[in-house]
Image 1 (cartoon, rainbow, N blue to C red):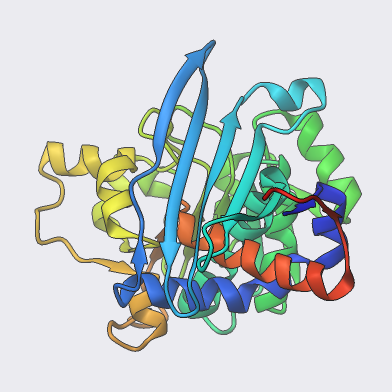
Image 2 (tube, rainbow, N blue to C red):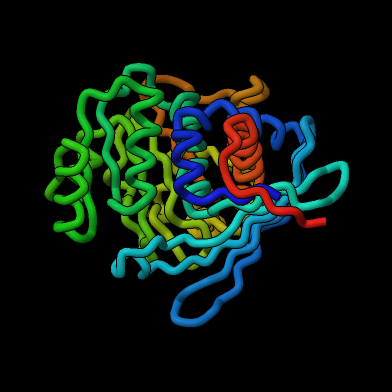
Amino acid sequence: MRILTRADITALVDVAALIAPVAAAMQRVSEGRAELPLRSVVPVGGGNRLGVMPGALGDPPVYGAKLLSLFPDNPKHGRSSHAGLMLIFDPETGLVRACMDASELTALRTAAASAVATQALARADAATLAIIGCGEQAHSHLAAMRAVRPLRRVVVWGRDPANAEAFARRHGIDTADTLAAAVAQADIVCTVTAARTPLLQPDMLHAGLHVNAVGASVPVMQEIATGCVPAVDLFTDYKPSLEAQAAEVIDARRQGLIGPDHRITEIGDVLRGAEPGRRDAAAITLYRSLGVAAQDLAAAQFVLARAEQAQRGIVVEMA
């Protein structure tokens, strides 16, 4: 078994390197070449959770599981809000092949998935990015968006103005005074927060906008107001996850704002040409990211291949 730390992962890959393997994984998901049980979430007290994400991908075969603690207040103490391990197994022997830091892997694969969606759905001339939130995912998403669009301007807005200012100084970008102001000037918006009450409202949406909604991975979190759902063309990574865990979609159906036949498209179907993406320049596209094990498996497999080539990490005998 090869053990890879956060430092190993960052030395081996960046977010741009993971865009192609994550895109390929999403196509495999939409082609039915994946086994993806829904994420299990266990409350562990104080608003914290343990998430378990198993899965298997075929062609080439890889299977494994991610165990991740979700502690939203950790950044206040200088710690990651997502901490845990990713395990992948040898499909021929069943032995553990690799164990790696799940926090860094999650940050990179999530941003890479948003880059895949942005490449497929955002206008080709999109040049202004608004990042809503200033935590770990904000850093990786800035790099991801720069990898797929020639951005001329980036603005950040955060619920803590001091954190937003610090993020802006670090990256040489601008801050916005309000969330509405940030969205109004953007072609692409990435919401990367741990919000429990909606931030993006229907009156903030405008023609031509593309949104990557990333931060709310369980139903008790919600970044996107329910009223936004009928106003956008809705895309996601995996429809069963969206329908079970996206609070705004669940609520929109409960309120009758959308019907059971409302169009929801997996990004993998767009990538493989089975479904259309952006309809026209005026369309408003929303990629609702839930995060699925297929992305973790594809990213981990890619990282492991590079680690084996570079002889990076610690190898221990398990059997």
